Length: 392
Image (cartoon, rainbow, N blue to C red; front, side, top):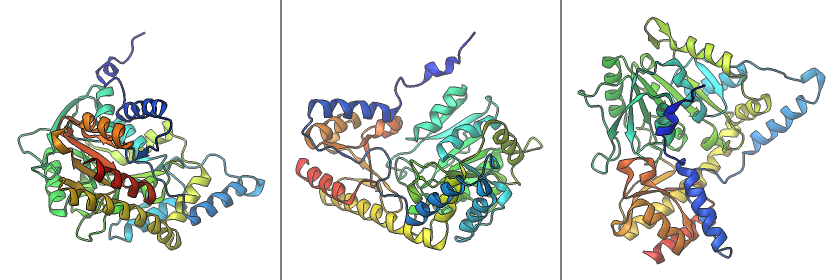
């Protein structure tokens, strides 16, 4: 028996596991400390009322023989796929229900979609980057090429005609940097992918945080993107489903490679390896996408937006460079006093009992930067910013 040796190329500890270990050690040594976490992108606001009512009602359905649901369709119940299609239509994007696949979250699909592609493909990934993009391809042994995201290009790298790539990862609003691509910039990525015959894997998990109407919320707002892109989205941040687990992936019918439909391949993959998301969770997700549900979710999103503004206002007052925050829940700040990312993490934890995420954990170009999230409570965010001002 042989194991997959590609796992030996991975970092020994997943970034957020290392953060958690350091925080646990600090808490054990300082049990009196009130530690405030602005690190991992987990939400603090509860599910909206419409989702909770739908969960309860669907659970009751499961307790009656006449309304019981067993195995559902692997691609999602029609009522949720229809609601997702209508949600896309609310910002001018047309997708077919048959192109929508419901899942237990964008993270799973971003990794699982690689089943459709040969290990011989070259992958183009921004640096810094959400670790899942990098790690899942390292696990498969694919060649990875990195594009430099830096302060100079606003952490929004653009295509280089000299670089050959087959699979391209884009995330907008970006995790970890909070930067958002414009339509013009995404159009250039679509043109590059079409010329190369490449496929863009577009992570739109944070699209609901975009407030400026000039900025695209979906890759499919770009002409011809359906011939070269797959989009991943999630209810985790839009509706607080981090513990409930529901997302969706859109694979257009027009997306063909080597004579094969990637939509049909994904359908075949899901029907073989995935049994679908539970009926109560899908009912809750559909309730989120009603007018009432969306209005309730917007109330929660406004809390996170106020947190983001509090963080960016604090950094501005301190003269610290940053990006993100306005159309994103993430704020990407330059470490003060030329500190390294982990040194700043340790200093912030030891002197301020504040937890963030070291930028270097997201890649080489993240060194010297630090990610804060706006997903804390308003009270804790205010406390954390008061502490930060006193420290620096």
